[in-house]
Length: 69
Image (tube, rainbow, N blue to C red):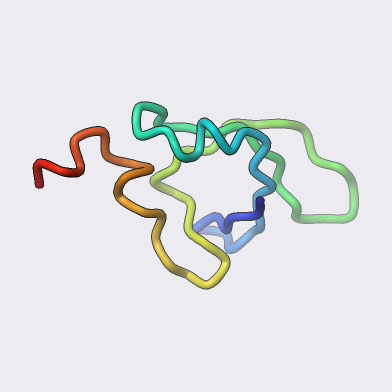
């Protein structure tokens, strides 16, 4: 799955979708897709990621108590 980093606009390949959809995880492992060389694995804060369309991630993926708001 590819998401986009808000600040740079770079695409990020998400390596662990389970971590992405878990509201208890604040970061997800991925690889930046910028440049021609294969990038090293890194962790990315969910708060800095959006869908490539610019849409924010669902609150149920980012907020543990999203139902109480």
